[in-house]
Image 1 (cartoon, one colour):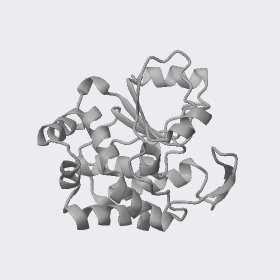
Image 2 (cartoon, rainbow, N blue to C red):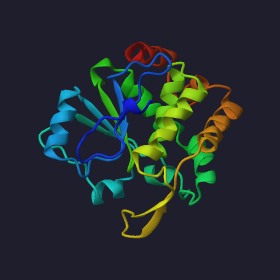
Image 3 (cartoon, one colour):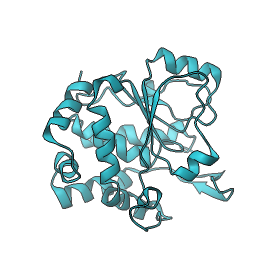
Length: 231
């Protein structure tokens, strides 16, 4: 699946989310943020037919690291994944990965529903979904969409784990400076992390479609997404 990676200068961890389940290639991409996008990177994004960028970061991250465009005319949908970033629930982002993943499944339903609604509009394609580095928030969002298109959990997990390669985490944790200027450590993702998110969804709602319906997505919108993204 390493052929999913696409070289977009200035954008980390950029790859096609399609090619598994019924999700076709060339309509849904995933990546890190565009804040260091180069002019050559913008030309390559334009060649991919980019129409929509769905940014899962907080408003503060956008202020510190705004996406670069270099003349791109895509639409941007800002849909913060985490509740404190949306202002709807005063709950902090868990510091440890093991707690983060079920927390995202529990609290990100409204954001995931907003992503699905945008993808129900065929004129939105092609779409890039990104957060800061395209690993955690993007990882769950793409997993939900791939599941909706019938991908197996094994294939979804294999795609999810590619972020370790895309971010140079295949050799272990690496230090980085976050949006506040604080030095932190970026840790590799493991299969058990995504499994805990998906288990939360299945335990509390029975299935990914039921989870999305609980958060207001209609059956018509689910059908539209399947039609728009399917091979």
